[in-house]
Image 1 (cartoon, rainbow, N blue to C red):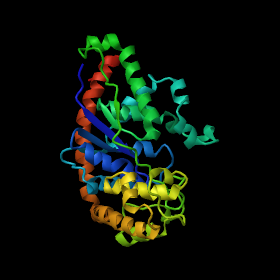
Image 2: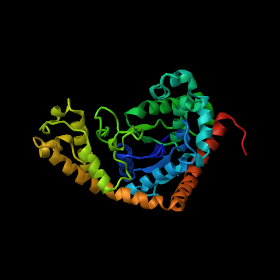
Image 3: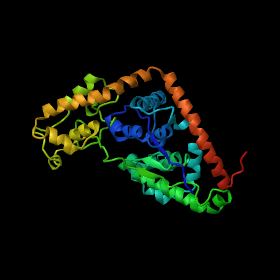
Image 4: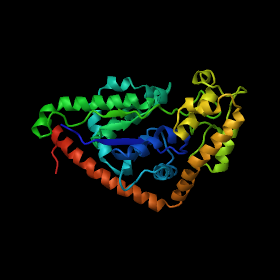
Length: 344
């Protein structure tokens, strides 16, 4: 059967959204709404796979929502909501716990990285996290998911789960009038070269909210002065900028700053080096600071304004959750019939 094209993606509310989140995900979300029906979720159920301070989680959830809105996602045309308000996510995840195989989950590299050496002490939720991610996508029968490198494996698992469900229940799916398959096999959406933003203090590490120094990252809520100061203090090397991309390979900090400039400008690294190659970092950093302030300053200001009105943000989430639940409930009714549950 032909599935209605629909995009699903989620962002964890773990606080301190930064430039990496903006360039790696949120800008792509904004662009996608021009071509697709989109569902953007603040995945608070995923967040608690590791302990979250209950007094901080609501603020972090509202901050992600504020970022979605400040960056230009239209909450009237698209759906913005938080995962825990739509119980069907967890309900379908349990069905998928019974479809997915242990061997599949044992291959998930992200669990190994996050659990570290003390895997026996990791939460069960962290282990079965990929099944919930599959449920997030498939409870809306979404056809496309924007993914970075670190989530490709999870999307492949979502496709495996969808395929196995369709195979295991093929006879029931057909008997209930859903044709040959009930769930689509969601496709990854790769939009141009991935923007991998690294720490401003160490070009070999990803920009992260967990790094101790605030000078390692540009937060979306930073004001113009903070943005400019962090770029001025960003680690560089004494050599001029190269004229060709190959010259960036042994210079991670230079490569990172050129990549940030290119992503903010919507151009390529080659274009940036044609303009600034051979010049000193001081000149380039001034231009980068001006560009970053122009692009990010208004977003930070709008986020701060929105965060001062939590009632409005909660109303956006409530409206989005209601619309999301309408779609999710329809899927779950069908799943219960297909699996053989007796329902009202």
